[in-house]
Amino acid sequence: MAAAADTAITAPRTHLRDLAIADLEGVLAGAGAPNPALLARRLAVALHREGATSSDEAGLGRRVRGWLASRFDLEPLLDVADRREAPDGTVQHLFRTRDGHVFEVVRLKNLKNRTLCLSSQVGCALACTFCATGTLGLTRNLTAGEILESFSRAARDDDERVGDVVFMGQGEPLHNYDEVLLACDNLAHCDGPAISKRRITVSTSGLVPAIRRFTAEARLWRLHLSLHSAIEETRRALMPVARTYGLDELLEAFREHQRIRQVKWLTFQYVAIPDVNMDEAHIEALDERLQGLRVILNVIPWNDTGGTPYRAPTWTEVKEFTTALRRLGRPVKTRYSGGKQEGMGCGQLAGGILPRRPTGGHVMAPPGIFSDL
Ligand code: SF4
Image 1 (cartoon, protein in one colour):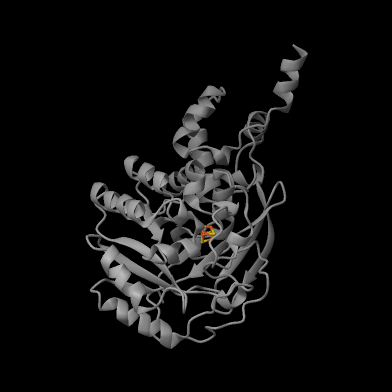
Image 2: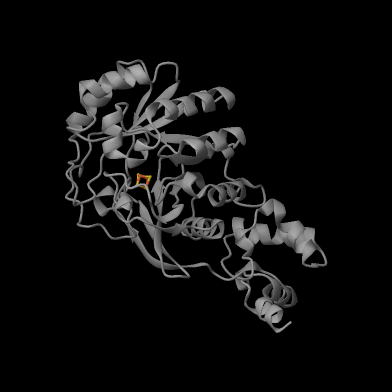
């Protein structure tokens, strides 16, 4: 009896932000809430749309707050470790979890709206050789509540509405499948931030079983692939995950995804690294390997992460490469990595710490080279 009582006292309370909005009413009803439907809606709007980060901010009466506090956790999961702004308007938010781990959300200022680049894990197990996060190893998965609170805090820092959410921050999102997809459900919910389903992007480095699961479960979010090379040896050198899931089964999984989910255009990311994956042989391999797939190639000029053998391409090299790719008859975009001079760009996220400051490479870009500016 004493042991049971101890368990009741010490068992961690469920954080309300960790629950799917669709399940809130049922959970509150199960806990004996007098008007669960109304309370569920109020909580969903307060936590996920208005970005309240504590029970005080949720606009609830004292009695309701007390009732909730005795049954659930509603207090902040994160605190702000730092906020940095780059000259191009990109903002890096660094958040600290209750157990002391730091991760980023990057807010990108596009022409039409704001994009939030969210992290799914603290660090990453996949150790891609061109990526600063890959040097950290995996500390742990983020919970859905932590992901959603990082969204809320970063979103309310700005007057402009967030139109796009991409899971391209720290971590491999499909390695934290359940928490990331629960977060996606809440981000798209009409009582939450109501981000358009077609504007939530999950980007994977190629975990084939999880890609197949995503397809089979008819998930609505956009699924992007970090391809980076259509030559097996190069891909293995860049991305250790390619030693487990080779190009044949990876591209077959995406072929299946495109066919079953009727995706008109897939998007494959391609980090462009001189002397590694930008030569004629790699262009020909892309032509050959991508036959039968309708793919937009999203070229990301590699960003200096410090302490690697790679170098950033010059603009002339990027231009020559994308021009050659366009001759394959495929749509090609060139992605601007916001804040890269400050270490906030694609592949540079490492909890605010880079092994050494980026040396630059792309301080100025010729007008018109980027597709998203
Ligand atoms: S590129 Fe993505 S999957 Fe690879 S190490 Fe970096 S965060 Fe992980």
